[in-house]
Structures are given as structure tokens and as C-alpha cells.
Length: 185
Image (cartoon, rainbow, N blue to C red; front, side, top):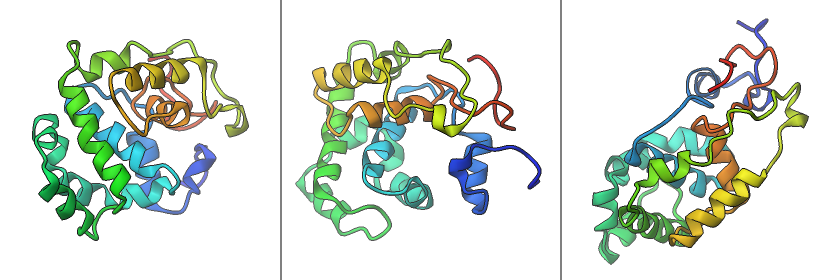
């Protein structure tokens, strides 16, 4: 398996990271709760390694009721304290409170979170030849971040929005020749 070409960000050593790259990253994700999970995890990742979040993902899912927008939107101050005491997740008050606020904002979207996010898909993005060709932000991620913020979302700047776009398949940034590149979305 080591002779396969993969995007270099995997480090090519951690099996969890390789599985995530090969089977999830860049694959289309739809559905409000599923997209909410990814928005939340990308926000928690801000300033940290994605591998840190990936290793804690099951703990996050348990702590945040499977990322049910309805359930998280109903969280109280007691839930904030419960989450801040949970060593299985990243315990950052601003990010915990943002996740709850984002669930409330998602609940209020007339078109749903998945629909809002997928309006920013860019299936015509150029195929990156190397990871150096992959941008940190794009006009699409700037627009998505602005749209999310306009609806009350927090921890969704253009870089985080672009990471979300990559993760859920709005763009396909697997490099040319990568084993996981599946062509246009």
C-alpha cells in the first residue's frame, strides 16, 4: 500500500488518518445533522491538528448527541459545563458555546444547513498537482463564511469554511494521481 500516491497531509503513517483520507475526505456529505457535525468538528479543529479531532470524533459524537441539531440547540448552561468537564473532547468554552449557538442558527435556516452549504460547491475547481497548489481559502469559502456568519454562525472564517468544503466534497482537492481522487463531483 505504500506505493500508492496519497495527498501528503496524511503523513502516510497513521492508519486512522489514511482511512479518513481514502474513504471520507472529499466525498460528498449531505444532510443537516451530518453537515452540522463537520461544521462543528472543523470549528473545534481551529488551531489544532485534524488528527487530534479525528481521534476524538467518537467522543464528540457521544458528547454532542450524535450532532443532532435539534438536541444540541436545546442545550443549557448545564450542558456547557458537562461538555467542559468531558476529557474526551476539546474543552474550549468559546468553541463549545459556538457549537450550541451554531445548532440554534442551523435550526433557524429556512433552507436547511446542508442546502445552504452545498450552494457553494465548486465542482469546476482545478485539479491540484501538488499540495502546494491547494489554497487555504477561495472566493467560494469567503462567500460561505460570510453566509454562515450572516445567519449567526461562529468559528466559521474563510479558512475553516474551505476546510469544510474540502472535507464534505464541495471541492475535490485530492492531488492529481491520488488513490482517492474520484474525478468531478
